[in-house]
Image (cartoon, rainbow, N blue to C red; front, side, top):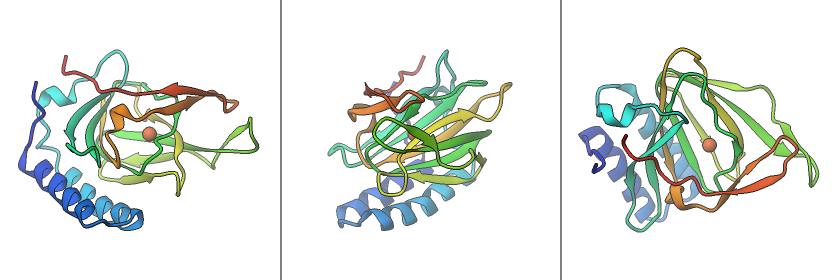
Length: 186
Ligand SMILES: [Fe+2]
């Protein structure tokens, strides 16, 4: 199924495209992108139903992948109680909660073979935006805040995120190579 292009999503994509086309640096991308993503998720009526469907594992549906691979936008759908492994991104990322809520627990390395939580988990409520990148903290574990309902967040990344060769981590910091790919509409 072709990705949807509702007007609100189209505006967000066009804004990011123009910002990246003029060579904006990461701080500006994160600042402007956060504001634009907050606008996008302020209303909850634009994402067609097929891109809201949960699965046996969390789903990452592509909404837009830049033809040049400079950025991508996905719909991330959490079934009740679902969680990611600890993982990195290796690029900037913006996370905006469209529906429900989620917890993000940051991690950092403490020596070569140890990974420790960076403070307490952060609860992101509907309408809130969070950011990751190798410069500001890139490793986290995310879970649906609810055990009895679906949560959905809209993410933007500074790469074709489904193809990035990155890593998941065990609790002791041992990395496992990870390419997320994209979910297909069931
Ligand atoms: Fe993440």
